[in-house]
Length: 352
Image (cartoon, rainbow, N blue to C red; front, side):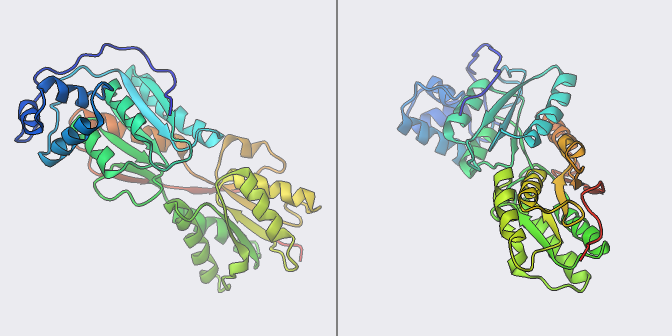
C-alpha cells in the first residue's frame, strides 16, 4: 500500500522516551536482550531490524503496556487516512471532510488504500510508525489487535469511520443510523403503496449492510407485509453489483415495483438494469438509494435517497483523533450521526 502526498520530515528517534506505565524503553531493551537504539528503531517503524527481533520487542511492548509519553518525540503535521477502497465519489466525500479539519489545524493528509482488505497490511503500519502522524483515521476498515497495540504504544490516536464490524467500546468510531435509514427508505415506499419491494444489500460482512436490511425488514413487518427472501440480493457497494442484482430482480415473473438499494452506486446499477429492460423510473419502478452523493441530484430522474452525512462523519472522526492526541478525553468514543430521507423524483405510487 503506497501513501500519497506525504510531506518530508525529520526522523528524530527518541533517545530516552519512557512509557506512562511501569516499563521504560531501557527495561524493554534489557528484557529483549537488545540495545535501547534497537527498541527505538522498532518504535519508529525502521526497516533495519531483523523480523525476529522486531516481533520480540513488539511482544514485550504489549506485555509491559509500554506507552510513549506524548511530546517525547517530534510528530509530523500529518493525518493518516486509510480506505479499504479509494475509487468512488463516496470516498471523496470522506476525504473532503477530513481535509476541512486538517486545513483548520494546519495539517496535511496522507491517503492510503488497503486494496479491498478490511485491515491494512503491516507495511502500512510500519509507514505510520515512521511518519509519526498526529492521528490515524480508517474508513470501512479495522485494525488487528496487534496493530492497535502498536499504535497505542506510540501514543498515535486512531478512529474508525463507518466501521465494517463491531469496533467495540474501546475503539473510537463514527458511524450513522443505518437501521433507521433502512427503515425510513422502506417506510417511504410502503407509504406510496408498494407491496413488493426488493432490496439490494451491501456485503453481509459489513455491519452497516446488515443494519440497513434489518431496517428494511422492520418496515415491512410494521406495514404487515411478508418478508420474501426472493426479493433480497447481496453484493458489493458498486455499480456493477447493483446492475447484476437489478437484472435478477426485474427479470422475475413477479418483479418488485420498488427497490431499495444499499448505496447510491448500487441504485445507479438498478437504473441501468431498468433502462435495458424497458422499465421507466418511477412509472414502472421506484428506486431509493443510500448516501446522497452529489451526483444523485443530477441523474435522470434525480434519486430519492437516504442522506448519510459523510462529510460531517469525517470531520467528527478527525476532531476526535486530534482531541485524543491532545490528551482530551471525549464524552463518548462511539458517535452515530443521524440519517434522513431525501425525496426526489425516482419514487411514485405503483402503476400496477
